[in-house]
Length: 395
Image (tube, rainbow, N blue to C red):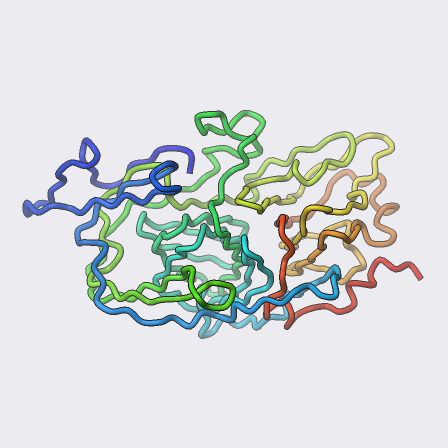
């Protein structure tokens, strides 16, 4: 993240002796991006963080991807995936929906505590679609609830603990790079600018770190390897609990941000999707659509114009409310649409006329645009609505 934080017990200067009450040394770990050339944090461990007692293979959830062939606009109904959450955790229970070499998108309904986990491939953006959870991390904890984005930096050891009576529903977006606010929202020093639709006050930071006194703790690691899609899994059984950090400081840490704190930008006529951007990563753009006033030109048509994403595939996750442009298509809360490059898409029949005169939209949606074609995962294939392709036909 762009701004500096310090939590817990850190020495007055980096890379110097930092001793525990018994006189022994704490072990300093630099967790940094881009080979010491970008954001980083320094963590101070009670025990050597590199120590491993045992190693074994982790059989990842099905990572198989197949082409969108024939090339079609598609609709997937996550509401048709198993909903009980019993026996399912937020790491092993993910159902892969879509993916390519830059991003993987999954959905999970989790009722159980996940194992300790780190993604060594890239950052994760977890959108909390329902329920509540505590995301316990080596930096400290984040309590999260419906509408939260949780940004977990690459290689952050964490686990997800459902905290309510209902399971937690998570729309998980894993990138092979780093997730950041759009550069145009930031000053050259990294502060959010006045035109940004959110700012530092809207970000929730972890609690102070804490030490857990446990031995022989398995940590599940997703990493590059010979597995399906170049992804493999390994379990490292660490000698001491990974949560042994007494303090840390720096500009790299997990955080939560609720979609309701995003301030939408509107205009006299319909605004293009980049107006709604919230994050970016390599070859991946994140946007969100929130309840808002809509276009106020006297001749405005509030729903989107038809558009061809000639350089990108568009994925829309309809989280809540009524997405005005999709009425009549079968899409509802929990639905996902895939509009691939090469297909002109836009409002369903009748939506143009119905939208005229509407003053506001009550909709919440998360959009991901990719600059490489998306492939279909087993989760998407299992819940596809085959009728969607013909939903624009008027005859």
